[in-house]
Image (cartoon, rainbow, N blue to C red; front, top):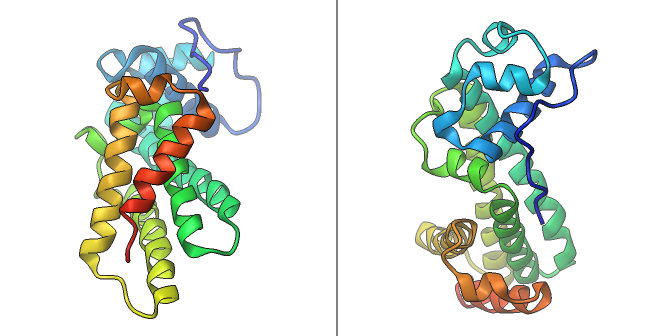
Length: 204
């Protein structure tokens, strides 16, 4: 379960990778206060650096949000890949596990997830963000393709989109607190139901 971000400033930054420290502070600020109250000044305060530091690295607030969304997609891909490995060698099991990883990331990082998928603040024309977002979709498409290869054919684009729609819809509804019955279940029971729902939508 996600640890709640605190409202106070983070431990002051002293050394190391300032850009990474600012992105970590930005992620915490986004989860704590939401995009409406997000600002370069609030991120600098949380990171314990000068007010000019975020602008120096990211230009303006949308530049920081663009970089944060790109970092979010990279974390998202890594999270799914780690979860996918739990499925072993079976492509269908791996795809279901990747779907569970997708949902788990959204539940653990709801504000970041909304920034990545439902905000017009990030600039998706920026190369790093475009590449990270494309890699995230490519990971799902590759997992669907592996299922199709096992069955002896190619996966139509519509099947990839259908699988994505199911997994993303579950992630978005759970992250937004809409699926209250599922969210209230013990983790093992919730994952069992989610596995069943995702498995029904897999490429046949």
